[in-house]
Image 1 (cartoon, rainbow over the protein chains, first blue to last red):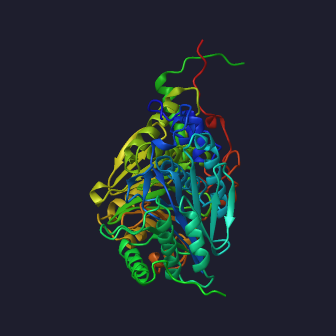
Image 2 (image 1 turned 45 degrees about the vertical axis):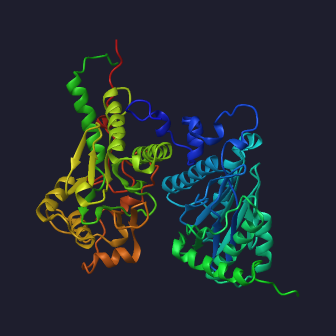
Image 3 (image 1 turned 30 degrees about the vertical axis):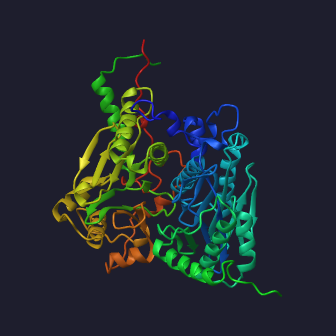
Length: 277
Length: 281
């Protein structure tokens, strides 16, 4: 960190506006991707986070994540949070090795804030998505040893005046998604669910309901995805981002939507039926 | 032909201090005023892009006068230090005192090293707490001295005049509106007459503890600034505004943000050479 009381020359050197670049020069041991992991598969040592869904609506984007972390057949945590605000106008959700993912999110948040403070302006939506890709790419070595982190990134693009969603692969590949997307172990089921529920003209609340329905379907068929926990009142974490900025929906707002979804499933357990044609 | 000659340490330090003070004295002043909800910074700065006041971290802000490239360097170093600490430990472990210490050590070492030109800057590092009593404003000078300021603080060109005015009119626990009006009047005050600084030439920022976000720093610009200032009579830009057009990178623009306070062209004389210690025999 700081060597002695005086700021080391590296701090005063003009140049990079990237916090992770500064870290890799000054304190590489703080970077999650620089950690040496012994040979072998480390994936079973730590909890895994599971399903994240995101969907756009006119005027914004919604991102929601279930609350379960698993370690093999064990439920490691039943109220983990896997969706985080990245900055005022974007959010990032993570699937994969939970501890590493949370650290990467913290690095990404600092990266965006650092740029904003040094440059006096925020990165473009594509710029943010590319920075996240670079952080994931640096993690490839760990991913190959079982500690993969796969994020989903969504935000409101003020320049394009619309919500946008980006998905990633473990090599740092960055793909823009239209309308909706999902990552994690339950993502196949969630995406299938959203395919049938999603419409372009959803309102904000309908869009949140669609993502909660999708998470319910994921939990229905994937053991690693947590469904709504009625006894403990644990419901998905939902972030809504619009032109006015992003915020996490209050627990009672999500609870109200989840209760409606569950009430519907009492009569039809498979969820709302889509028209055949 | 010149011969190495003896310079007493007292004389050397005095020369270096005079040099730095001269550079700082040419810029316009920055005022920091504590008000009920935090700390307010005001400066006359016609540039919308080159800031004198900036955010360092959640509850910490930075203000500076003097040579732009030097204080910009220190600002970036502060952001790096704060982000590094916050990332390695926790956001709450980043403190204004730690930052002020790092700046003080850096400025002090450079000032007394003899081999480097002293920084021609003066800084404020302010941090707000949960209540007004916990707010802190540190003032750092070119030689690394730190002072803990209470109520209000002024630095830069006409610091004495502005401070005298504030001493007479400052009351603790003012509203943002009152504090802003007081600070702006103080900046426009000179012994002869009072001037109404145009709203477009003001740089205003606050550390506001009532903000709901963790980041408490906010700039006050545009309509909100005009509304807070209220009706002030005809605006009057600084008399030497033509000098403000100096590009930031001009080699001799000590403070490209503000016009020199001393009239007439500033011819670089022998006094302007940075006093550096003569080589050891």
